[in-house]
Image 1 (cartoon, rainbow, N blue to C red):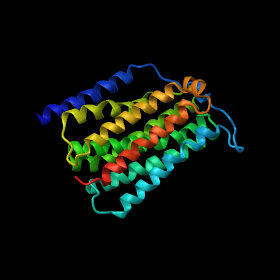
Image 2: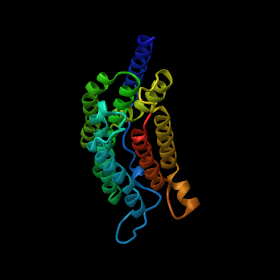
Image 3: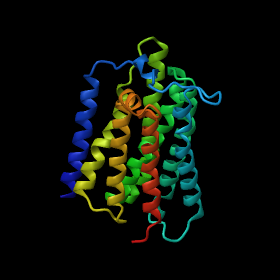
Image 4: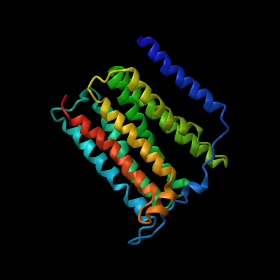
Length: 249
């Protein structure tokens, strides 16, 4: 029943929140900034990690222009604000990530992670709208964005006190990734976007995989690192979504 499905999703969210509360604080490991490919090319430090963000900027720009154009065949017209915010987040993530990789440190990392929370939260609201309820998706967008912002603000605040804590940012990033496949399994897509959503989840998985094996990929390929490839897969996800929005049912 619908009540059981909603109860399951809420219950999982509560369990995840309680688990985070009982998890020790997660500091930012400074080794995170030591990426495999640190080559300076054309006076650009960490060049490929910087340049590989251009697809995110491009897809984000195209997506925002598409939403604003209100072309016929746009499947999620009722969620146009949610979709615009999602592509805005992708655009800002490309800029913020390029800025961070130009000079990787905790201070610049803020501008990489903050726009990512915009994309995560907006996309989660879109899934809710397509699979569960349009009106709820419209209402929940702004509270979700505030939660994402507060997770970054909490990390920044704890960093300033010398004991950085990423627990709530981790919850904002990974809880939707846990809930989205469950929602896709439990509900039907109103606009036949489920194939695109599954591909997006897969692209995200590949992005995280290449991020985790940054060093190994660079040592194997020599010319490109896992983190640079991660940016490409991260851009493929919104590209798939954009194509799905334009395909008529």
